[in-house]
Every structure is written in structure tokens, then in C-alpha cells.
Length: 290
Image (cartoon, rainbow, N blue to C red):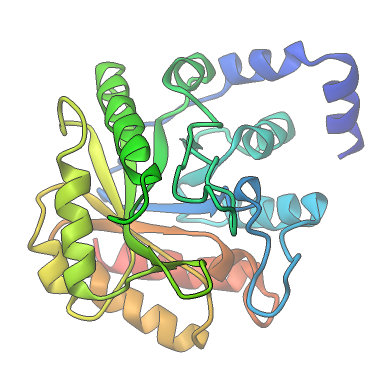
């Protein structure tokens, strides 16, 4: 970590040089499945894991957990913002990995403007320049919030531009609303997720390179019947017992169209602290479903 700090201070050009040298791989290997570790939460001010409200605030600790996860067999890559990806790049942990860049992080957790989710992270030219494999965009839909239409417009433009560059456009849609206290809430039932899927799938001038990142809900078969787009399941806030969470993933991974998992906190911050064991268990589920 001292070397990373020194490079950042004295030789920032090394970041681009490391990206240019990085060994790449196809998006999908022979199994046709993907297991990605997500670490873009901090850039939206979302640092909590269960009752630990600042669990993701320790950058060295987060990087250590990410490095452990990325070194495990069956982990294909990572989803994160530039600060995290470039640290991992300088540490040599992105060699031969799928790298998905997080694009819109402007909807800070708890903000009055949370649903006006501006593109404050990667754009398509910077993803192309870095040699990464795709861009991910959060797409929360609240019919009562004017910020939604600006987010939809920006996401549609990003989908089109990523497709023109032949890169994955990972769209993460949620049907949302504000509760009586003004906090953004996600509606996690099949009807709401199906509705969000139909909106997300129609974004952009082509869906040829669009993937969906979806929560696992009851009646997931009906959700997957709503689209032909390749889909990755998200881990979400790890509030349930690990055994219950893994069983839910296992059932959903067997559905047509589901290609794998994108999981962050549930793997990086397991209740017992054993990151390697949690990642290995998730990898076994993804491999077993192939």
C-alpha cells in the first residue's frame, strides 16, 4: 500500500501505463458464467454493512478483502469506481480479470437529490481508454421524482455508447419510492422488478450489449420470463443469514437467462469474517449452475 501511495503522489502516469499492459480475457469463459465482486458502494456514500455503519470506510481493509476475493478460483472479476480499480490495477490484481467500471454515483445515499443519479464516475471514453470490459449504471425509477427522467436519459445514452464500443452495458434497475420520512425505498417484489426490467431493457439505441443486474425476489421465474437479456444477480445488503442467502441464490441461478452473480458486501464482509470461504461458496454455486 505504501508503494501505491508513492506512485499516486509522484508518478500518476503509471496508472495509465499499467492499464495498457494489463492482460485481458474474454467476457465469458467456457462455462458461460460470471462471478464478479462489487465494490462501488463507497462512492455513493454507502459505507454500512449490517450494524457496522462505516464498515467500508477503511480503504486498506476494503482492498485487502477485495484482493482475497479476486485471488480465489472461480472469481472472474470486479465492479468498482476508478479509485478502487486503479488501486487494484497498481497492485497487480486485475490481470486476466473482467473489469466493469461504475458510471453513475451522483445519487448519494440519503440526499435530497438521490434519485437524480448523475454520471459522476466513468464515462465511455475513459472505460475504453482503460481497456475495461463494460460499464454499470444504477437505474432507480420513482414516478414521483423528476430526477428519474434525467437518470433514464443518461443511462439510455450510456447504453448506446457502450454498445458502439462493443462493451457490456450493465443496467441495474429498481422500482423505488420515498417513504413518509423522505428516504428512498426499493420495492422488492416480482411485479416491481418485472416493471423495472421492461423499462431497463428498452434503454438505448440497441440492447445488443445490455446485461441486467437484478435483485433476487420471490417468484424470480416470473422476473426472468420478462426478458431475454443476460442477467446477473446482485447480492444486496446481507441482512439474512448466509445459509438462507446462498440457498436463494442457488435457486435463482438455475433459471434461464441467469448468468451468474455480482456480489459485494455479502462476500467481502461475511458475519464470520472469512472472506475466502464466502467467496468459495458463491463460486461453487455459480459453477454448479453452469
